[in-house]
Length: 395
Ligand code: AMP
Image 1 (cartoon, helix red, strand yellow):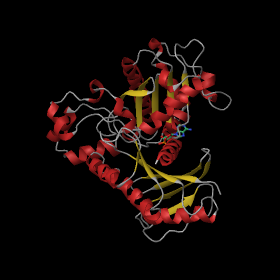
Image 2 (cartoon, helix red, strand yellow; image 1 turned 30 degrees about the vertical axis):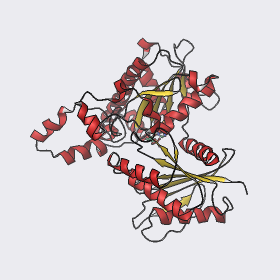
Image 3 (cartoon, rainbow, N blue to C red; image 1 turned 180 degrees about the vertical axis):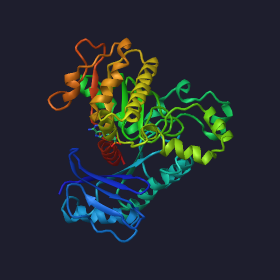
């Protein structure tokens, strides 16, 4: 049996696993959902029936059950050769992936104040695999690390400097693993090296962000101190006037309520009043539901404005790249967004946009467009597997 690399992605009530071999071939993937609840379940993708879990299974129990199922199916030997963990927040401590030891665990834990919903569950996954595979090298790959190359002009807010000095208030940026993959994959498709390639990368999923990448490095990005800033998202508002907080206070809305609304009840869901799912929104809009059409309009207009803003960081542009569930699949979002960008020289080929990726290299720009436009499926698991393999070899 070949050596395998296990990729672990822990969400608050979910666990996703992927198994790669050393040649970067994905051997299997699996997920567990609704963990810590009565209806927790786990499944190996493409396989039936579900993998049995104890009642109210937690992350550790789900991990054990899925690893046993991998072994039963002869997908994995006793232990993987290395394990890569996705970790949401690395603060300013982590500028790249690291081999996990006790000091790294402590440092990840120290960043939890910046990501209270995410880092503790990421740590729960790390603790579970360290316990189960004490002799296997484990690697943490951070969503924020790629953006640590931002200059102060891009990462500082225009706030009193003590806020940064004393409380680490700054823009960190997220989706770094995906934007890093785009930097490399776009360069490869354009026949260039990442070090000489400058792109604007849009990751449009349930969370959305856009990053300016200059010569392979992140130089500006739309998400900030938290993943709430920037683009319109599924349920998150993205940018709002900070004066909103005081205004709503005078209307009797508590701070906790504003926080909840901005994160969970806004974005596409808030505007449409129906759903945060872009596919459903497009169907509703086609059927004449005006709030859904408006939600798509606002989403695309905000995105187009940010494409323009990202250009301020670049001296040339090799491509605009779309990825994430919406970026990879929504013909309408790509067309509407590029429709706002004619003045900058973007021009879409509607036929290629409709059929991207199936018979082509993912390019959707018109022959007259000033810049290439690419649709590239993201592959965050592969980035984590590569880092896990690389750092385990070096350890
Ligand atoms: P992600 O978080 O990357 O899985 O992306 C989720 C988003 O992608 C949801 O808003 C989905 O509606 C959207 N999406 C997935 N497939 C399509 C599609 N074919 N057309 C439009 N949106 C899609």
